[in-house]
Length: 153
Image 1 (cartoon, rainbow, N blue to C red):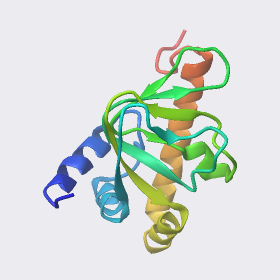
Image 2 (image 1 turned 90 degrees about the horizontal axis):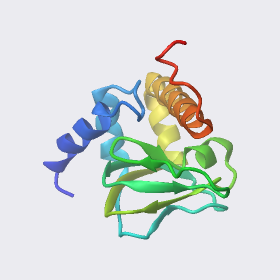
Image 3 (image 1 turned 45 degrees about the vertical axis):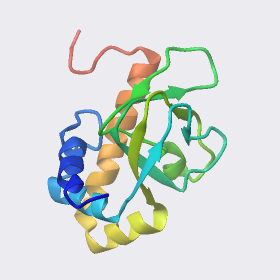
Image 4 (image 1 turned 60 degrees about the horizontal axis):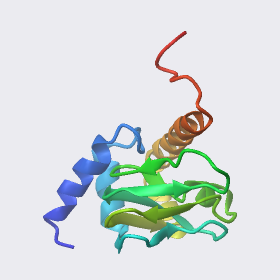
């Protein structure tokens, strides 16, 4: 990947309203610099249910569908969103598969790389985990069909 692509990727990642919303542009620049940019073809598993991810993926291009074991509406994720975060957080096998439904590009950061970034930049760790919590809360509400928290009844 060229260095010219990095600012574009930072812009995509930092502008997402459903991604890691508490990270700053500088946080994203660090992540893009330290992450491994990966590409997936249509039908490729980004995250496979039942396997540990050892890290998270942050999509910068393309859409992927989340497949859960029971019948339900299949949520899709796109640029700026993450997958693999549940397995990353609890160090257990993935709870769902994420399959590219079009060509996908994503940054992958493994646990040791993220931990070293958090040690060097403690506030990054705080914003990162707060963002993951917010993202997971939104996804859970969406999955169970809860009322949009922004709209009060």
